[in-house]
Amino acid sequence: GAEVVFDAWRKATGRPRAVLDRKRRRLIEAAFANHNTEDLIAAVKGWRHSPHHCGVNERHTVYNDLGLLLRDSAHIDRFRDF
Image (cartoon, rainbow, N blue to C red; front, side):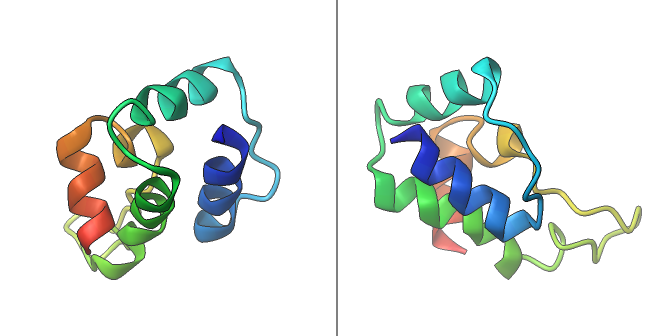
């Protein structure tokens, strides 16, 4: 469930101390309405295949927040398919 997806995100982002709070749990559970566990895990790992999201951008900022990766089906599909 949500724990599996969250653990995959923590490993992919190097944030071992991140906490699965209520807001993050709700975000992941909402994503399960239209996507399976495999797709969500691929989405939370997919940012690593996008130079822009890895920090190769004008701000030199890494964009890998769980809220961005699982924002909606369009974002989930994009990051899953990277």
